[in-house]
Length: 175
Length: 175
Image (cartoon, rainbow over all chains, first blue to last red; front, top):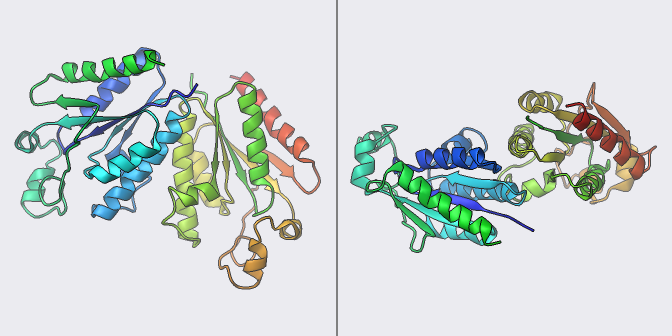
């Protein structure tokens, strides 16, 4: 039995993807599941360090994450991806390649994300020190029919985590 | 308990890496182990399709394979890598990053490899249609102290497979 499952967290910078991803990972592992988190930023430090932030490079980064996610997932590991992955067509391309792809829209209005500005990137982008920043001078195409939506400006982290965990558990039990 | 294990098959083109890798993979899976084969050529069709065959690109390809291998291995999957990986320093770099790295020198004299020429690449390289081909106009640096050496010109496939499998089983039992 294939048990592929890739939980793909997409959303703006500072929307809460990493926080959510790390919490889900901890919970899954604590419950005895094999799980792995693929973080877009960490990928950029390794596998995608040759890539920049043009649409072409962003798409390639997403494809590479998708390739690795699928490799892990087909070996029975629940994969959580946390990556802005701003383009709808590219996410859909990855979806078409991965059985058990679950799109989670980590959604907070850009004003909220910008106020959080965890890494100080919005400030840099607004000051023109950073180009092609998703939501500022590069588009972020929100999912149209995500399997799950977490409104991180309205829900607590725990509420968002539970929403995703419940989905995962139902999915596992349904097979 | 971490059970990392990466069986890294290095050797010239047509030395027998893929054959050996596929056989080891089948045996491990048949015995109920989780195992995955990362093939250099297949990687080049996906994760490394931007890369060519310069030393820099070859090294980057090997690093990417190493990164993915480690991700799988730390999740309890026995990883078999089949890739020319011609440069000693780069293999040693990957070794330093991967607990349970096992270097297998898939060794046949270049004359034998060239006679086999499974993919017709030596012919192309000799005709100058293919540049920077390992063993022809790009170096292949043989391992100095591989954990295992398979002389595929002197051993049957089954003998080579058994050599590697015995090593894997001993390694698993030693922990």
